[in-house]
Length: 249
Image: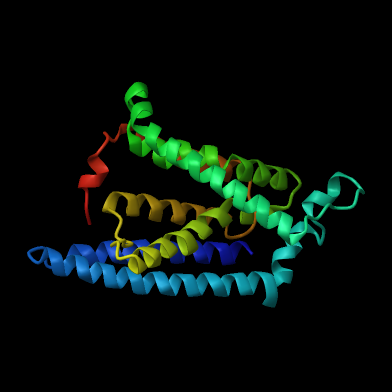
């Protein structure tokens, strides 16, 4: 399973590197044509990424689900806490809870985004650091805890899947879906991130892939990953607000 997730991470990195490279070689004198080329390329790439993500779900949940259940030893991690039967919500209750939670989260997101400017000013830090470092690590705290618990129980495949799964979901589902939705409502959204962000992401994928592709780990590899994260965090801390918006491919 680790090799599959690493391959998907590499694919997501390619989907960012190629548009940034394409943008850098297009004729800068024709800015409109350059933007249109990137948009069409991004939309085609987004559709392909969505198809590949759907195939990944089919691969994981139907055709090769045994590969993704071996890491958990054939039992769910929630079943080890006791012999009580698992409680299951009926579909209507689950749908109602999902809708309610989605509405609450949407309001929280609006207030969070609106408070970033004042927080960045009071804390004397950049909005890039808050948006790319603090919010992701706090928002994914539950996944981080789950991955640590699975690793402590020596279920490395499951821990790897939890740790990397959200990154794959963002790169192969959420981001391309936003591009397609922007296309549908006539709002130009592309996959052309600036060179700095693209390099940071590509380096992160390279290090993570080299570290976890064998499905094993030790304290030194963990320290290297934490060290890389701290280096990236310090980099975004040092970037003044507004600089990344001026850097293009």
